[in-house]
Length: 266
Image (tube, rainbow, N blue to C red; front, side, top):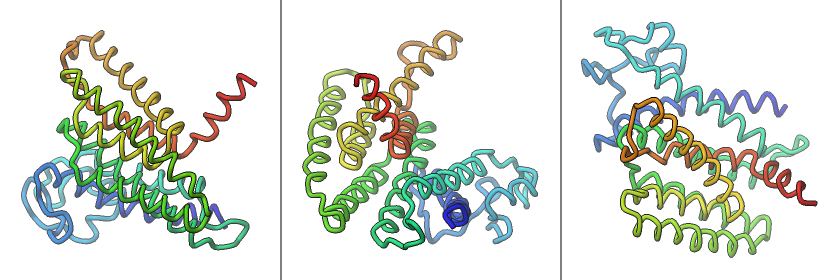
């Protein structure tokens, strides 16, 4: 049953991925993302419903607009597939069906975590293109973090998690705020807000793991770009995609990684 549900939520994730593409394109342009029909950014023609089937429409159209034949970026099917796969993985990790029993608490938690992961996908692609993370996206993660804390307190009677996660927000978020304030071109305000929101979401240990993973990969990418002469030391690197990757890994496999690391010292 869990395999079936994982596939179903994965398919839903594919369709939600289409909306993520809309957000990735329109948010930097400050365009409306809900009411305005989907349209080709080149010719402006409104797309039909059969042009919007995740993955398949892009493949059948040969990666081109059905009207003007202009090229459609491979980003569109990539985002759809990525969101679908991650929604399925989150379900596998945080299933709201345990031993055949439905859990309302698990369902709401799953929905909130899926929203967080989808938001991180939007953050990654927008920051990679514009070196800017919209405040609205960080706010969504903050709200999801607060709601998850409320759920854990009410259903799991785990009030201690509030103190630890708020402490993570204060200390980790505060530390990176200080770094951004003191180091010129060190970090953007959006990156600091993203780390702060994820600190409230995950707590100290998982946030530190996410930061280590994200900054390590960002460093490798930055050094590689310098070596192959595609950038210089002053070239700004968008941290949003790397932080987001670290957060997603930490959400999915943080407990496994942390427990394995601690076992090395036992």
